[in-house]
Length: 102
Length: 91
Image (tube, rainbow over all chains, first blue to last red; front, side):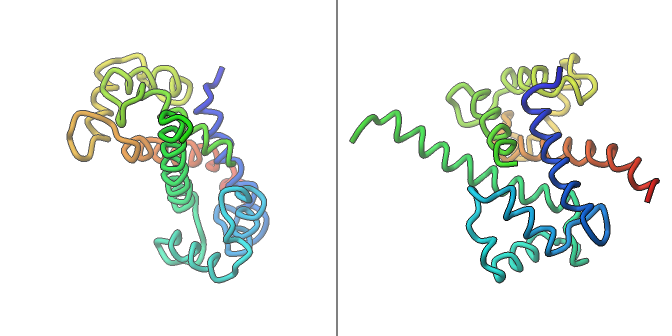
């Protein structure tokens, strides 16, 4: 039986390919696909998907080879970035907890 | 997708046993328990040691969260490639 972590990776891959196959090149996300992914899958983590300039900036940051598309390798950077943010948030939460009510 | 990211983070945090990084023993446990299904040689201590050395960019003998994410990214990439290999043939 796959572990929790294996299931998590599997679902990240599935999510990417579900959006990447919508239009244009199938193995990559174009700007619209990236925005849709952020809107539908990351609505709690990110608030910037409503802002077109922010989507452009994220797209530019992720697109390291500059082809105007986000491939899976570039998408992994987004996952890593979100994980780091999520970890910091979680650590802060734990610290607060261990200090007890202030 | 958000729950998948949470799992990636909590898997690391629950494996460090309160410390900031994974030491050799906890890294081995994590790989054995969580990645046995998608990686080869997870039952070989020497293979895990070698992988740990490969990931340990700052060579402190431990695996930090960043270094752990390198592994996750690497595994996810190769998993995705092996999956999309068949799709690419069809298109």
